[in-house]
Length: 450
Image (cartoon, rainbow, N blue to C red; front, side, top):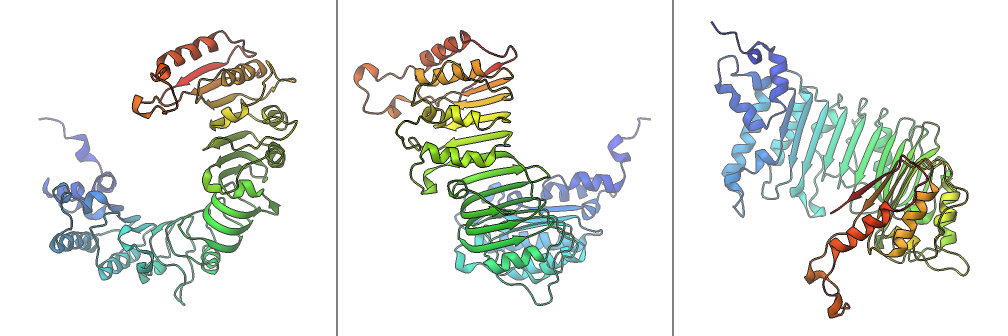
């Protein structure tokens, strides 16, 4: 007699957990395997209804879905929730199919079911509510989900709350995507989540003057705020896009930083450790002077990691008697361990003469990432200077430019230059790097190609 299948010896709760990791259609189909499996799918701790549920392959070529098919999907979701026989850890309704528009009454009913099952992780995201003036208020049962730990809400109106809403006492993580908010409703929402640790808000309209006081928030991401003042003593990471005026725990950050795309990481004492800046045309700040750039850097002398990404050329405006500040940048950041010069930043640095070696050398820098654009000898000179000036360097990562098709080569090239010798330029760069002197015997050179 053969030994029983090991999978069949697993307890029902563990099998239900495995089923919850599968697409919901496949999990429900398992009911035909045997009498034991008939209702196992009703014990799944996580129920996820997403694109695999709403957009079957046979419907993908239809310009609009038959209302009967939508009704059938709605009945399936209702039946699965109605038959569910245990507490529900997660209910995720993520509809990004613009051809599927669920009945609001059904959505309210599903959230009410989830609330009765003490749902802890809830996703309600619906792409079908555009344009903005059609955004609806969330299902009323959402505000009775008192056991929520994670909330992912998309395309709903949160400008006001029910009178009897007392908050989400256990909520730790919240993602609000294209949710309609006001300055007051955002502050009220945060105050109604006394244990909130992570808040991420993505939006396409601007907030005004927002002041956030929170003794629990550790991770925060906001977009499009005119003025933001944070008093969050436990804040560890802050990411922002187009925030015109920003102060963090009493420290006013430079306009050029907060008005672009940035990411900050701090240690538990509030000291800044990681700064990621992305200067792009969307910043609308024009050109920077090197002296202003160095003034910004002076605010972050404790940095361990600096990432600078220039999305366009000629960001730095020339000043009389002052070069683009590679040397001053490194001298002002003595604790720096990682430096990433992405986009056109290396090219900006290479606009002025670069010495063979920095004096004094930078003893703490261990990793450098650079983007090459033109295979210019000045860019090579910068790489050589870095290799000879970093006695602790462990990794130099070089990203090669994207190879162009002949149709993409600029018209300004004459006929003799019409063939872009990408392979030859790469080979020459590799040879040049091989013969460069290195201050660190442990330094590895990593070449990345598109």
